[in-house]
Amino acid sequence: MAYRMSFKWLKQYMPRSLYGRAALILVLPVVTLQLVISVGIVQRHFEKVTDQMTRSVALDLKYVQRAVNALPDLADIKSIEDDVATPLGLTLTVPASGMPASGSRLWYDLTGRVVERTLHASVDELGPVVLPDTSVVELWFQSAHGPMKIELQRWRVSASNPHQLLVWLIVLGALMTLIAYFYLRNQLRPIKRLASASTEYGRGRVVPYHPAGANEVRAAGHAFLDMRNRIERQTHTRTMMLSGVSHDLRTPLTRLRLGLGMMDEDEAAPLVRDVDDMQGLLDAFLDFARGDAEGEAEMVDPIALAATILADGARMGQAVTAGVMEGDGDVALRPLAIRRALENLIGNALRYGRNARLSVSMTPKALVFCVEDDGPGIPAEQREDAVRPFTRLDPARNQDRGTGVGLGLAIVEDIARAHGGVLRLGQSEDLGGLKAEIVLGR
Image (cartoon, rainbow, N blue to C red; front, side, top):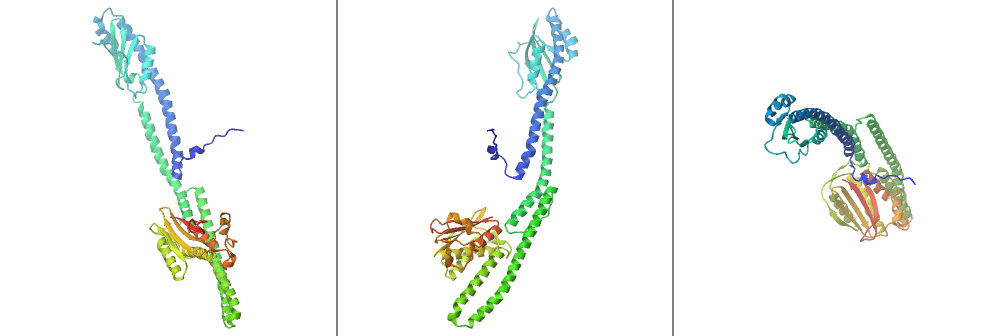
């Protein structure tokens, strides 16, 4: 079995946003390129140049060293300094104190170690090499007349200001990265606008959007607009069709009701119930077809909306109570659609249970409407089927307890999705029945 390397552990360290990943793609090659060039230039080019320059100076040092050793005594050292050392750019002195024990250099002197290594390899009897700064080189050697010190300028053994290339490399790299960032931001802006328009439409809000950016992004934008227009036309056509059907059916139903009113009450009672059932079925179909088409999104206080629904339920004699009401602030909702969804949930709860409870919870990221009852509930394996249109569950939801056609939860889920949320079904912990939650993002 072939071994396949897994990089799943790396995903947790990767940026989540598009900007972050694009910046990583942009910065990582630039930093890698700078590191490779820096190592290549500093370790190869500058070190090689330094080695060549130092070997050239080593020839002058050998010549001065031989001239000093050839003197019978130190009385003529001045002539060697004037005639030999000075023309070569060297300063020859006889130190008053002894030779230092070891050489030294600054910790950030990158080419200093190359200078030391090359001089010791090229000049015999060379002692400590002292590099007190980046401008002077002090060389000590043991001559035939004792310790001697030679000073020379640092630029003779190594390239002057080697850090300038690194500075230019870093500055230009940062400048190009900044320019590329602004360009990349302009390229990513149409993608963010497309994502924002899609998210808003998923929440039931149509915002102005015009395709822009690269050809691929424009193509995706036009495809989104075409899809949105088709959905709008389909929704409008469906609503208009069912509104027309409703209008056409209400007229004969009204005639039937008037005709039944002229019959004997005992004989007409079953037929009146059938007419009422047909009216209820017609209203349910219209609610499902209408979904969230009515009303525009507006800023609404969810707790105040829930209080209004509870007050209306109390006036109608419904056994619905208020649960936990936490959080504050307004949320962009379609109040008529949300009201219809909550009233459907409360109606279902009271149809299959004796008591219902409505709770509202708001956090900075989510809004949750929760309706619980003390009825039989819905088994976990049937909850996915319960939200499908025209689905009626038995025995969890007894068909003899109502005249619905299985659209109540489907209507609620449709409204929740139109707001960019979901409908979650579970079991109430204290009441024991169904727990229906409408979860909306803020």
